Amino acid sequence: MSQPADHTVHANHSPLRSALQGVREAIPLLGGYIPVALSFGLVATQAGFTTWEAAAISALIYAGASQFLFVGMIAAGAPLWLVVAMTLLINVRHVVYGPNLAALLPSSRHWPWLMHGLTDQVFA
Image (cartoon, rainbow, N blue to C red; front, side):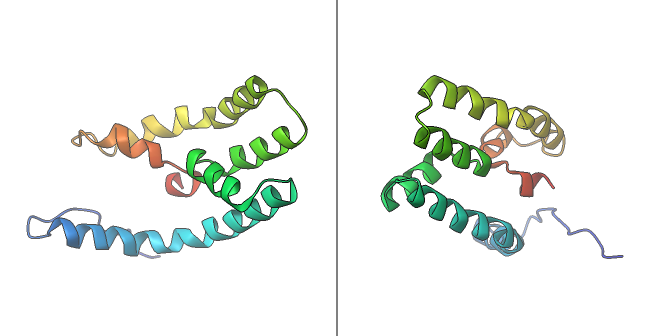
């Protein structure tokens, strides 16, 4: 069985070194993000959105399932209030995810901001 990664920050680590370590540890997550991103781009352009609009949707809606929902519902002519309501409903699971992760970062005043980057892959 493999050993868990050591996520402790040592006093001799510079902020740059810590950031680079974070980048290295995040690389495996790309295997889950890239196929979804490509699929979303294809679905959005097939639904009539431009490449720039698809990129803007991805930048503004940081939730894969919600991006697909947004494109599908807008393409079908759903009212915006319903699209927003369904997006909130899909993402309500983060109400459970966030507090569970917050317990791992009790000494950090930055954890509320870090929760904005929470995804299913990060939680797993």
